[in-house]
Image 1 (spheres, rainbow, N blue to C red):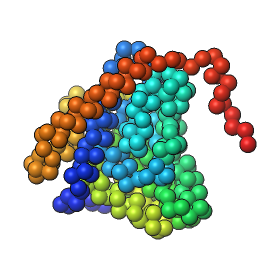
Image 2 (tube, rainbow, N blue to C red; image 1 turned 90 degrees about the horizontal axis):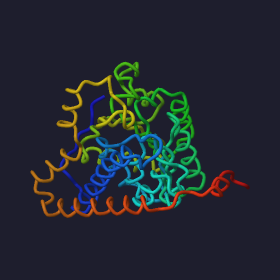
Image 3 (cartoon, rainbow, N blue to C red; image 1 turned 120 degrees about the vertical axis):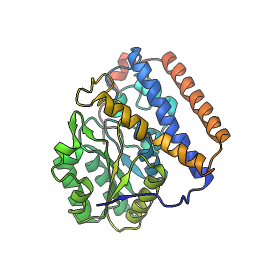
Length: 330
């Protein structure tokens, strides 16, 4: 199955500025969270999204707050792309009472229902059943909404994912299965773990349209995601997309990555950086100016810096908070 490539850009300047701002925000956010984690300011583990920014950004540009997404353990980028508050995210990762989930969710369970972000998920393959449920609700209510399940290449082998795809086809649900193939499921290579060597092809076998796209190409990603979401929103049923990219760090920060050579890491950062690829194109085609780019860079850095300063000063949950938001009473 050939990978889709971007045609001549149909995006407006505002679209490109928005896309760049989101990708840059994700990159700077992740780089800063790594430093804060290594400084002991973030509890638990963090799994960063740098290297994959174009995928989440391009997909979520076609969604509204009413559309719902299910994320993975690598969910910071999806949160930012879906419009979650940066300050609330930083506070949450730092375990502060003022975080999006009051400091109780942390990195792997961060969520914001008001933005249609159903949450990062520590369960491998946990998002598709949630997204299918959301799509069933949308179809039942007839509200025109769609849902997107973000799925890693490792999770693509999970039974819950197969069952979700089958049910979505049977019920003709408005859901997009977005596979982010970054080459590794934890420490296991995609080429070994996926027997067919073709995630999109396997999804197509369930009876839905399936596409492959270069996930480092923002323009191609935006085009393919737009068509898929439009198809699902129109009531035609589910769609699958396999977007190939790479992750710049290990499965988690601190992962020694003994399964990857230093040469591979250097090569992918040089050749598969979606932000560099984006900038090279918009500058070569004179779509955005250096002034446009520099302005966004400065603004993004200021937002992240301010969020970190406020996060470090914010209060932690109290003992009484242990007993709130634990059970839902109907």
